[in-house]
Length: 367
Ligand SMILES: [Zn+2]
Ligand SMILES: [Zn+2]
Image (cartoon, rainbow, N blue to C red):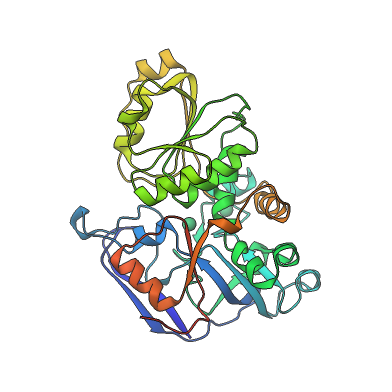
């Protein structure tokens, strides 16, 4: 089988230089204990994949600032069918998820036993492993994942048909990130129907955030997006989109959700476009720091929180339920389906789409 493998030279605990992406033949993964062997159906190209494979700035250090262990097969937002169970996969799981049935997986492999996991902070597990970052991922024909991180997406296949259901199943992970950021990561701050919302970045995560927010909020959501095609796509989905903060004029917002990871943009927006008691959610990985005066935070009663991950609180279950009903038009978010060779080229050339590009590792290669 072929896999998109990422190589690099370790320079510190999580930093790598000399990044090299290869599309190469790999052996089928070994099936151990509680693992399930999965045949990948579709895997989304994520902004993180572009970060992982880019290192031109910053002295050749990989752009992605999070947890990584190289070499690794990348790809973490995917759908698959069950091929084979490891010998310790419980029978109850096997009954509920028969061979050939469709699943998706949490990207975060949390231990369930450390202090953070016991407190329910599973996205901050002290022994966290991540699919496509530290554990071989799904830009490949097969991968293995311990059974407890898998979720059935059979309801999507029933609703949309097999192939379309599998494609939509690959969107569960990014939507779960957005869902959790709004509903659970805030520690009790709740988005209200009448709040004015600004989403920074109208890539796939920004759009997912807007779609989840729209289920609560009835007012037009504003977005900032510097890329023309993405801005136009956001407008088609009913957002009021602008290229940069300067164009926002005197607009002020109750909620600001960052899905872009540009510290200078976040800073400008916080300094010029927050209402009193505004809530700011930081969702995109960003290697640069913010500099905000404590006086400004106090006099504005600002609440700033970070949101990482999508696990816990039955987030996956809730998003699968949302997708199984008609409340979100998810089908139109899929921009195109490409093969592994095309995915390799897109990543090397850093060619991002305007919405979600899916990789089908079963497709014949196109140059
Ligand atoms: Zn992702
Ligand atoms: Zn843990």
